[in-house]
Length: 563
Image (cartoon, rainbow, N blue to C red; front, side, top):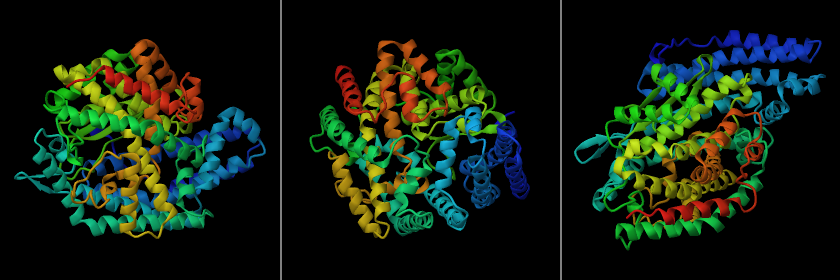
């Protein structure tokens, strides 16, 4: 069934709550582990129906944030979601307290129970009003961001549609594009500041009600991190500053020389080559068709996956008015359908979507076939991002379909960008840690913190008095900071994983693909660190890993220079 034909029905939450209550009672009365495991599977089916409808609604809302029906439905689902969480918590507590827990863990897997325990530590019924308010504030931010109607060169554009102008070969155009973007954020400065201020205070209050000093610990728990601690992440960030930031400074020196710009500024940052960055050839439809051909040839598994995606129109990728910003992949559990959302704007980022988001979608598709329990289909987020970021490199032999003669430029800038991204991701993570450790900071103090951390992680940047950016507010463009707190370092860990797959694919493409399939097929049945080791890769948290992996990629860029 095509996506447009999927029927949306508002979930009957009262009925779902009653059914969950009944299942909880049955777990408490069950005579053994076998019966309790069967009840767990029933609960999963019930929740799958709810999540399918809520996700369908959410997709249609992000495709057009002006659609009043789906906006209202999305708000309603957001209001009900924490109430559902409360019922689910009671059900999980009954399982965790089961006298048959040992046998249950053998039947369902011990990781399931570890993950449940983490979930219970991050929720309690008393924070329901706060979670509802948090959802509302997040929607307000998305709507404000999506409302951007930016006048530029006689046209009206969205933030995403400014992308190509930031990569223009004309320096004045690049600067003008950033000024136009900055003025949208400056004009709405009070709203962006106030929304974040309310979110920080809200999340801090949630944390304190749950017994935590601040939101840092709660944010970490909410990410389901089950195999490392905040100290490990701090050590990872230190390794990035020590072993990778000096390499990124060399990359930027090289870029400045390549462009012939001795006074390299922030508005030069996105242009990689004097004659322009690599851009995909053809219309968005032709780019999609090239993506289809790529996955049909990559492997039998990706061929059947991409056929499903096209037959059922499980993409919405063109940038248009009213559409929410960004890109994502999500799943419609009842149908076994992944869905890819994006904002194509004619830059190489369009191809990154077809490789990155399709990596998520493919993993979702495989796990649905391989792993019976919904809760163990997806690993924690850094594992999910390994699926997507590695696919970006493993599809390299087909990138010429998109870039033609500019393919060498794309391959070089893709590898360079992978290295440059990691310090930026650490900056986003470190910034949030500071913000939530100081919840009473003013907007100005937050901006000063961002500028301080920019010097640590991206010392080569000069904002040159650009509006918005030079006052340290550039972080407000980053959706995750508002919508998904502490979900960003995951990309950095995953990038280090992807660079290991990249190195492996250069030696033996078939072996790299085999190890990738092994990783994907394991879904969420192991912790992230165990997944890495299970397929013979190093965990990014292993001592020396960042240094060795990033040095190898840097070396590859040195050997594949393009002027």
